[in-house]
Length: 147
Image (cartoon, rainbow, N blue to C red; front, side, top):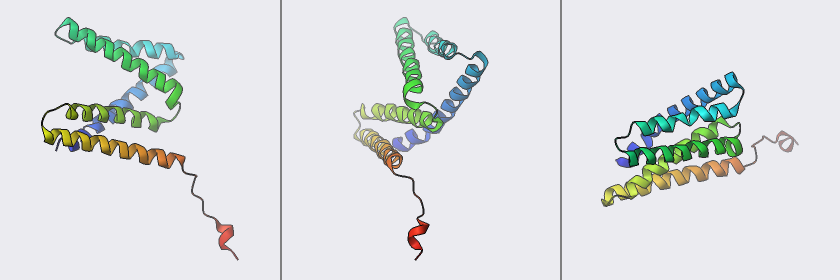
């Protein structure tokens, strides 16, 4: 089942996100500057581009990588803030959407259905997280039970 395989591959993404968060926090602690963390993070797409076989592939990889690093830096700066769980949820959601998009681009109806199931699972999970975040904290009303 490709949808289940796509979901189980996300645990490696969680491990990678944890590694990136820890590395960036250690680098920020050492340098005391967020710009140095961003500069080091921008070296990763360059290294990925050097591993490609052709120049167009390398330029595409570097371009997408730089955009991804800048988008992650912007999300960390303005959206996620100090919520470590949000980093994992954002990364796993992005990777699941990419996996589902890849399955939806196939001609095979079985793979297309698995891609749709994967995207619906991600959408349901995000809806449940959003609903839980908007709920008031549950608290036991002891005063109302006493007579």
